[in-house]
Length: 343
Image (cartoon, rainbow, N blue to C red; front, side):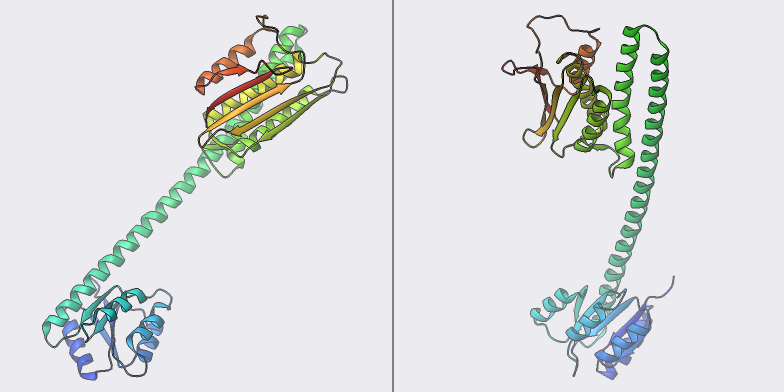
C-alpha cells in the first residue's frame, strides 16, 4: 500500500522535526514547511494527500493559509492544528474548509489524534471519490440507455410510418369508397401513434411527451388531411405545457384524432367552411381537461352514429385506458366533447 504524503506546516522548527519522525513511524511520507507562504508554495508544486496547518504563525496565520490552500486546484483534505482550546478557532477553521481539527499538545497523544484525524480524512475522501465514480458510471449508463431508447423510438416511428405508407397504398388501390375511407381512418390512427414516438426521439425526455408540441404536430397533420379548397376546415389548438407518459399520450392523441376527424367529416356540409377547436388545460396539479368542439349541426339525442361506429369504439377504449369518461356539453351549439383525467 502506498504511503500517504503529508505536508506539515508549523513555524516551530523543533515541532516540525518531531512531527516528521512521529508521522513517519506511523507510515506517512512527510514534508514540512516553516510558514504559511512556504506551505502554500509546496502544496502548489507537489501533490499531497493530506495537509496539517498550525493556527498560530507570524505573518500569515493558519486561517489565511487554509484559505489559500483551499483555493488550489484539487486541494487535499486539511487538518487544522491549534495550541488553543478555544472552540471559536476550531469553528472558524471548519467553516473555512478544514475537515477536522486537533488541539496541539506535547507527547504521543497529539500524534495519535493527528493520525486518527488523517485516517478519517482519507476514508472520507476515498468514499467521496468512490461515490463520484459510481455517480459517473450511473450517469454514463443512463446516457447510454437514453440513447438506446431514443433509437428504439426512432425505429418504432419509422416502422409505423412504413405501415402507414402500406395502408395508404392499399386504400389508393381500392375502388370501394367505403373500404377506402376505412383504411384512410386507420392510416390516421397509425400516424397519431407514430407522432408520439417522433416526439420521444426528437425531444429531451425518453419516457414522457410534451403534449403541446405533440398535439400541435398532430393537429397540423389533421389540418392538411381534412381542409380542402371546396370544404375548408380551420383547426385551432390551445394547449398548456403538460407532460404525459408515453401510453397516456398515445391514448389522448388517438382520442383527439377521432374527435377532430368526426367533426371535420360530420359537423359541416361537404361544401361549407368550418372550424374545430382543441383545448388541453390543467385541472389542478395532476389532472387535465380536453375539449374538442365545433359549431356544426350537432348530435341529435339517440341518433345512430354516422359511419361504421368504429371511431366511437376506439374513443371509448382509449378513454377507458385513461380511466376517464367522455361527455358532451348539451348547452353547446354544435358538439363539444369533454374529457377529464389524470396526467
